[in-house]
Every structure is written in C-alpha cells, then in structure tokens.
Length: 183
Ligand code: HEC
Image (cartoon, rainbow, N blue to C red):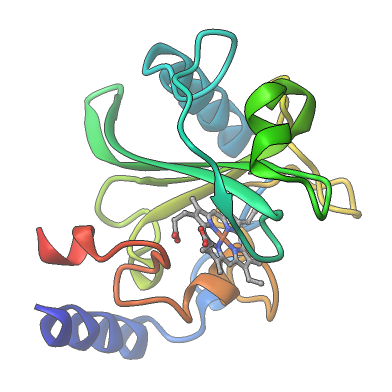
C-alpha cells in the first residue's frame, strides 16, 4: 500500500510541475481558507475535539514545533457534502510543563490547536489533499509573522511550514500514526 501511494504522488508531481506554478493563487490564508477553517472549527466543537465541552485525553511528551505536551485525536468529519480524515492536535506549554500541571489546569496551559483535515480530491493532490490550520485556544485562526492566516495549503511551495515538515512523515504525511495508510 505504501509503495502504491508514493508512486501515485510522484507521478502527480511530475505531471503538474512546481506547486506554485499551477494557478499562481495564494496557497493559504485567503478568504475562502478562513471561511473553511471556521467551518472546521464548528465541526471540531460539535465533535467535542475543541472548545468548552471538549473531551480530555492524557497528554504526552511532544517535540518542537508543536509544544512539549500534546494530545492528538484521530477522527472523521463532514463539512458540507464532503467527509474526510480529521486529526486534531492540542499543544500545551510552556517548555518544561509536567503532565500533572497540564491535567490539573488544561485550559491554562493550552497554547494552540493544529489541525489536518483531508479535503475533496483535487484540493492539493501533491500533498494528499490535506487542509492545514492552526487555531488559538479561543478558536481564532493563528497568523504567521507576516499576518497571514494559517489556514489552507500551509505553506505550499515553501521550505518551511506545515507541508514542508510533514512531507518528512510517512506516506500519509502523518507522523504519529500509520492508520490512514493501513486503511
Ligand atoms: C518542523 C516540523 C513541523 C512543522 C513545521 C509542523 N509540524 Fe505538525 N507535526 C510535526 C511532528 C514531528 C509531529 C508529531 C508530534 C507528536 O505528536 O509527537 C506533528 C504532528 C502533527 C499533527 C498530528 C498528526 C501527525 O502528523 O502526527 C497535526 C494535526 C499537525 N502536526 C499539524 C500541523 C500544522 C497544521 C502545522 C502548520 C501550522 C504543522 N503541523 C507544522 C512536525 C511539524
């Protein structure tokens, strides 16, 4: 299965050429991306993966850039008529924070949510159609230092960012689990 997926990705990349040459559009942070990220937040709240009624898990030690203490949830969600894989990571801090400190006051230690949602075929075929987003604890969309909202194909064609780093993970671009490949 792994070989088949990576072969497909390689041929798509050859067929379409460099990522940004495709349409010249901004890869992320557009009005459409922000609107979609808001729908995604609503979905996460409804699934109790974010917001005031969220389900809690036992946090584990993480690495940069996601924070030193993490919770990760794997789900499937529907937006409009599209259903896709949804992975929500909660990032806790600051550096050196203990499990007990996070457990006793999770909201006080929550730094951000980083989220991957698999969109419809053709959204970003070279990167397995993942939609990337980073939210502040209150659900607002985080911005990079240039003031661009971190939502959409973040940051397609660039050397750093969600896509560049996650391309180093297994064939599904997911570090923590191979369950998407296995299915
Ligand atoms: C410099 C590398 C790097 C960058 C940049 C990065 N990530 Fe990650 N990401 C990781 C690593 C490593 C893990 C696994 C961490 C763990 O849980 O132990 C991870 C895990 C995740 C997960 C859980 C699924 C998985 O792959 O295991 C999500 C969701 C996620 N990242 C989203 C994002 C989003 C959204 C961005 C951009 C806003 C981003 N990441 C930027 C390295 C990176």
